[in-house]
Length: 421
Image (cartoon, rainbow, N blue to C red; front, side, top):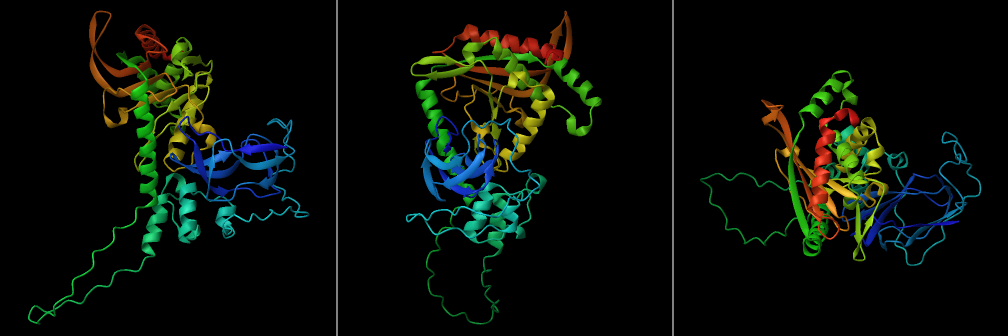
């Protein structure tokens, strides 16, 4: 038997609101299955389970705020289970309906939610936040046309349908200019329109960002370094590779920057880890948080685990997939684990240099600006080369400028020899 507990989805998270169970008592679950949806300041997050077994009890009712570490469910048969064990029944075989174990009633629980529609049962492509909002508004998700990537239904799609369902305001008939007009009674002031669900999520995210960044600037003695890196060799190599690849497998230079940063961090261990209990804790594996700007405002930084040991194809596939899901509010809990360092880039909006702020308890953050063409001297000759400005913000309690300078130099050396990536 194992206890499935509320995971920590970031160093600043203390609790989350359970908004959806995707399993019921009696269901068999396997390592990596998504079993619940939790609303946090980062938005709606799909929660994975990391044991095999059978759900014997759902401890927490829906719409309950649950602190990190609290028990959410009980999984039977999970002791000693591993991800390598074969699943019990094949996915294509329906489970036997005999002897279902009912959920025991909970006196303090709110009224049960209506049974899921067929679209919910088959896990239609809809973000968790949009699914919750549709259920609250009584909207059938089958009516909604998704405008997100791959037809995903987003919060904006639900709100559009909800707005269309509202009665149209009555239009007063036109009055002839010659006809006398009766005096009109003064109208009561209209109440302000309620904020949309998207706006509420965005405001909560901004408060979380404000808290974390205020703590960072208050507690962390930052030092900053900047370095101009010749990206011409890496870009030419990337262009040559893409000429031989189908469109869906082509690389973007951002993948090269991430891989080079991960490899350079192997030689700069004082930048890869956490400041905890007034001491630096180094980590051997490089888990990079990649900052993604959301369409409705705010930021998330899903984690690219073990980035130094991933090849460029795997890194590129992850980057493309996670960006799409982050902007559709479909991130998984494992993607919000604690990163050992963060990479931020503003190159897509034309900013040449970014000086990012460290996210505690991390001790460094790397920034990349846009690629610009500049005069560049190579072997005594002057050429037009494509350059990127790389920056590093370091925590002076864990490292110093010399350590940061060596990291940026290693980064430039790797990008000058892209075959090593």
